[in-house]
Length: 151
Image (tube, rainbow, N blue to C red):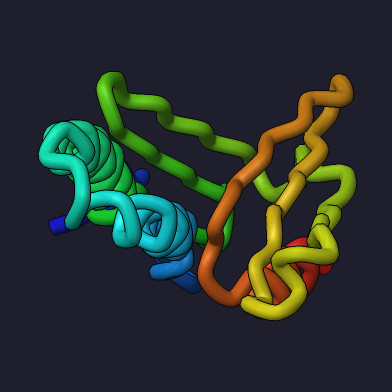
């Protein structure tokens, strides 16, 4: 059971759930391929390069495990009363915004991420607080659902 499902009020219902997209891992794959191309020519000639490549692979695996943990532990839910976001890597971060306190929702997409349809959801609440949700899966659908509930 999700953490967020356990912390709902009595008459609160979940309208939509979301998770992070698998593109979280894409940057690691790209970096690994770049490093492999750099080291592949020189590894056969110099045994020291194997040690360096092994160390780089260990660092790569550590970052991959951290992002795997972030991917599996992040929960995003939209209820009929509030927006809930929980992430956990080394510490738990829970964001709760009441639907009536959401002033605007922005979607940000850089040129490089347009190819992969990656967006950042920026939710501005009252008092000008900005909550950014990176790597969200189906952000347009999520934004439209918030506006639908808000009406």
